[in-house]
Length: 328
Image 1 (tube, one colour):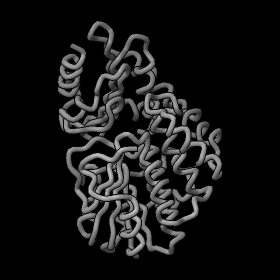
Image 2: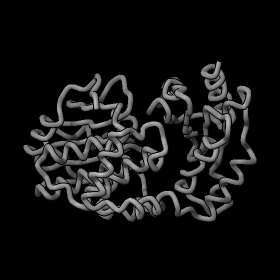
Image 3: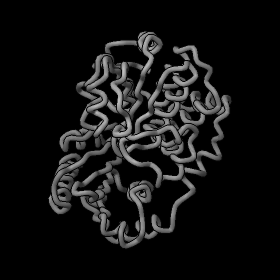
Image 4: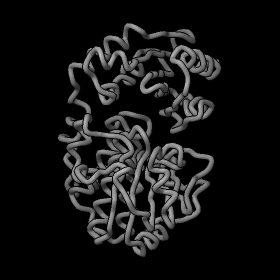
């Protein structure tokens, strides 16, 4: 795996900094996904074994996502508001800028030192030390290597959290980032105790009935354009309220659009809490990260996201225009 700018350190150096600190916060991004939560929990577990005072932060509640709840160490997750101290070290995982830390950005600002470990394409990093590897299929793979550099035994608990992040960020090893390296790391994690079947079942085979009903509404609203090479649809807070659904119930929906034959770019918009969050997916190498960055977001070439502070109708117009430009 090749590091890229703005990387300014090595995992060995990060390990030295971590070992010299006593009070450490580990935090991921807003709207956490499996890779984010897995990275936080795996690193927190390793730090506890080193007798560090570690505080794994989660900006948003994950109690409605059963698959996250089942991960070992999830009971230790706390909100930034529940922390009343300034940590020596703040480690951001799967995120590189303060904006996507949400309310945890204030905690980070109070820390003496900061580190970012991430696998997203970024232009700049809000941290003292940055280790960025966009070629890594998941951030948990980088955490797996860091834990080795720390001299910590990679336990079943750590392997489970790291495998969960790798599995979810590769779409169950179906996406284009399912490289030979991804399978090698996955095999090592399974060897250390990760139960691939159990984790796959917990994430991919445990949908609520409300999620299925949401899918029905999503399908009714699908708009095909760019000669049917692009698909866009949306769900709203009103949908969640009407169906008794949660935000977690929306997670599988992007794959419904992505699976359509002939569709190269898919987008789902989620209008919640006065903002519109978008998820973009691509097939055949079209760079949706370029689209997301124009909208203030980012991610990967084939999977990216963004948040817009505007009405849903305006968001649809903006996104479709950019997708049309990318298709032409």
